[in-house]
Image 1 (cartoon, rainbow, N blue to C red):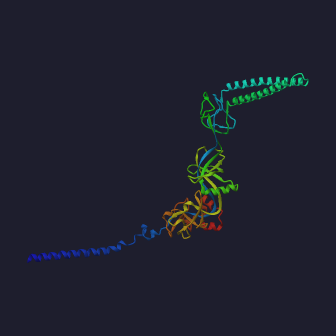
Image 2: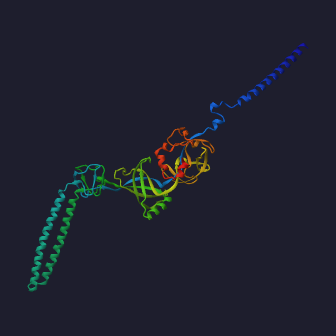
Image 3: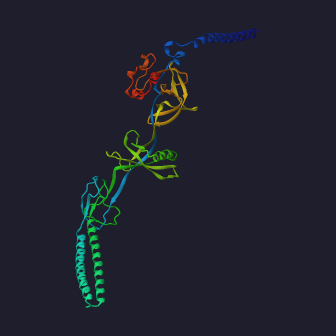
Length: 428
């Protein structure tokens, strides 16, 4: 009985201990809960004050200006004329009279072929001509005598007719001889190879001493005409109507050639012509532009970026291209109001020229649009305004968060030039 009472006592004590343990833990959790929900100190930048802190952004002012409607394309520089200079007679090349890369004019001497055999042919033709001319002169004298004798009825008319036929025969022979002389002179002239066009010479293809023939396919040298020079490029067929309308109105369209990176402008020219058919495979049409190329900035077979200017629109609202954003709801821009609060504004964009784009609907001149830092924004957020080229916080000295007009970069003042006083005040 005593053992049973002991075990019962031990069981009661164990149960009491477990209950006391759970009761004590419950009290500690209730005491610690308010401490975990307390607001952290103000100096750490968390909580509501940190969430409402202004977001630094860079803004630009929507302004009224001009913008070019430009069609961009890829083009290939093509020489206006390309000629492979070949010999027109067979013979030994005795002289090369040009330097590789030389700029030549029409008729400049390029090479000489041994002329001795052609000179002898010319001499032979001249000798034959002189012999036939002497026979013709004698036949004409006999013709005059025979006609006099015929008038006196001293000879038969048949003899006179035969003499007249002989004269005509010699006249034909003289004409043939003169043609042979002219041909011999031409062949002799062909021994002097001259430039058929003006342009720049390429590398020499044949050296002095080699036998050259008129049937050679290689030629002596290649001449390319680079002043003026042309660029061939393709544009979508959808843009063809606008180009044709301008050409039919006798308007000269400006074409600019830029380098491969589209950063440096190489030359300015004009549109020359349009191809007569559309490529059914690509849906594009070829165009050719002409450039003076006085500084030789364009080189044959060079790849360039082409900017074809269709028209210039005046008095449109323009903003930097970086101010336009794309989302599920379409194209929009973040606009900053007078209280430095941003709102999301749907916009309808027009043509793009370089780093600016026209806005056809959605903005008015003088409004501030965010061009950097838009990825951190949401509608209704407070912002800290900065202009391009200044560091964050530089604009805090101005009462409205903007810089004084005199502190703006020269480029920004030039962009705002031409706005009305009301627009300038709204964009200040």
